[in-house]
Image (cartoon, rainbow, N blue to C red):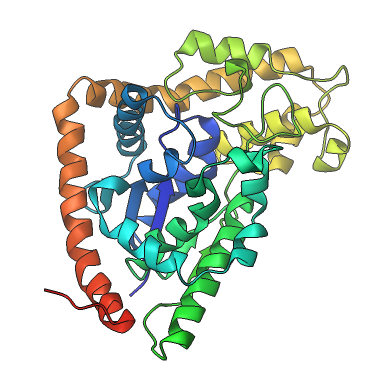
Length: 332
């Protein structure tokens, strides 16, 4: 049986990078794998979150996942904090993982910055919780981007160390799932940086909740260069903004970069940007309409999360009991 676990943090609006880089591919996976899609609110609080905003974001992210095409009847969609076994297994992994492993995590260094002593313990131990998220369900595959590969390697290390130390074959060695069609969407203000909800400028990203006028304005004001659009991908050298915008078009239209370059090469950014804005609005509009419908009925979203959590707890319970027995805990 092939089982996927993947999560998304509710730390702000979902944006085009989340959709093209991950969610769109999750929708395609739901017909091939048993899937768990988790709104990882416990990960979110490794950095300070305003409580009311976090609550709103959990529901908004859930609505976005469903609106983008994830079927809550076919998949398990839930938020992490409703399944306490995540925290319990994470503590066991805190006692298995080595400090040296965590010290090598580049994402901690990036998020903690120069003031590592002021970072929360949760931020430092974040990868152990991520390993617990995955191994609690004995997931066999995890969709990953470049920024998560190191964490998945740690998950594999923890699984292997547990199996070795306790002389069992409890946890699978999880395999990464890397998509040929995953788009790496960069900032509209700087083509060398990934599109991110943590960027202080809202103009750097297209939010899944932006209306048509906002999408058009952001694309119109996106950073470019003075040269004509390249006629082939070889022309992207030293032109990250051109590569990003044409890559977004390719992803939205399900075309290759070669096809986009053949269609627009030699043209001006002004004309291309209008085409891109029209395409982005056409793709996102039905998703946004469904999101608005879901968010207008908070009870519907909460029911999805409640049902998903119940199914997740049922799946996790025997695995956690197995781990408790392996470790030597006395259970009631």
